[in-house]
Structure formats: C-alpha cells, structure tokens
Image 1: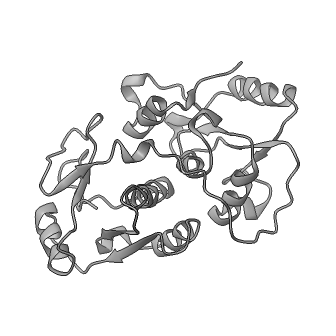
Image 2 (image 1 turned 90 degrees about the horizontal axis):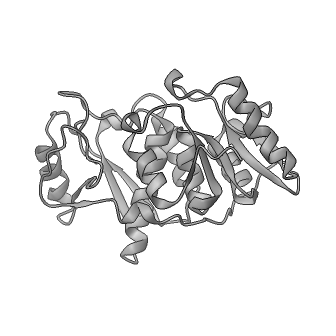
Length: 250
C-alpha cells in the first residue's frame, strides 16, 4: 500500500472508508489469484487505527481461507519510497501498486510497482462459506442508498423509479447498510451472505458497491449517480468500463 495520498498533497493515505478496505482486500485477492498463490497486503499503522482492525478482519474473513494476508509495519515517515524499502527488508519481493487509466492527480510511479487495472477486471463471484442468521426471500436484490457523501445521494423520485422497476420485475428489495431495519444487515459478514444469494445489487457509489464486486458479475451491479462523469471517482469509472450498469432506470 502507498503511504501517501495520490490525490491530496502531503496527506498520508489512511484507507479511510469501508469501501477502501474492501477494494484493497479484493485487489490483494485478485493479485494472488492471478499468480496462483496467496498475496499479502503491507500497510502502515495509520491504515490500521481506530476501528479499522475490526473492519480489516471482518472483510478478510469473507474471502477463502488463507487466500490473502495483511501485514502492519511500524513506520511513521511520510514517504512512499522509504516505506517500500522498509517492507522489502523482510519481504524483498514486495512492490507498490498504482492506477494506469485513472491515476490520482499527484500520482508519481515508483519502482518496483504494477498497475492494478487488469487485476480489478476480475469479479470473483465468491461463495459464502460462513453461517448466517439472516432469513431471505427467494427472489430479491440487495440495495444501499445511504452514502456518507451528500454528493452521492439520490433524489426521492429517482429512488421511487428504481424501487418500482424491481418490484415490477417481481423482486423484493433488501436494504443493506445503515438504513437497514435489520442490524445484522449493517455488517459486512451478513451482507456478504445476502449478496451471495441475491440476483443483483443496486445502489450508489459506496462501500457496498465495492462489496458487490466480490459476489456479482459486473452486469448484475446497478450504480446510480447524479454527478457528472468528470467528477466520478476512479473506481466508479473502472466499474463502468468493466460492465457495471450506470443510471439504468428502466
């Protein structure tokens, strides 16, 4: 993992949200899958603070056992190259990762490194191997429309169109995340179970959009946004390029 942000000057990249952690775990899993071995993601303490340890563990446990690992290193210098050199002292084959098609505006590619674009084209459709207490209908989709960013929220008439579409198709919409009436469906462990049984996921650009990438083919992920494409985050553009459905109301 890079120590510093490629978007905001002089800011350490702290893997701030649930979606950042899911994305990082999936990238690590896909990288190992492509090389037919497990992979390890090396991070710094500021990427493992506050409530993040629990989130890292919960997300990693959604993947097949021993398919990816996380290693936290004691390092407190705001320098990508120095962090890489520290990691390489105990793991000489460690390399950094960057984005090729949609780089951060401050991205400066150091070597050794690789571009993640090809690896993030893999939607693994993971089986769910843990037990869950959730009772689910036979025909349903998962949905999440409560992003942390106000810029990503939809209007009420848009939500009505979306829900009516799936209701008319005979599906029950199961809300996951903070707006779920079921507290279990506010946790990744049980949401993963629901997604593994659902036909599709519908929602906004959020952490659960990233979680959906673990369980659905891209054509079964429906993402909605009111933002102009020039304002999209790089991961939303990658979802679009990989075949996810954007703003499909009918």
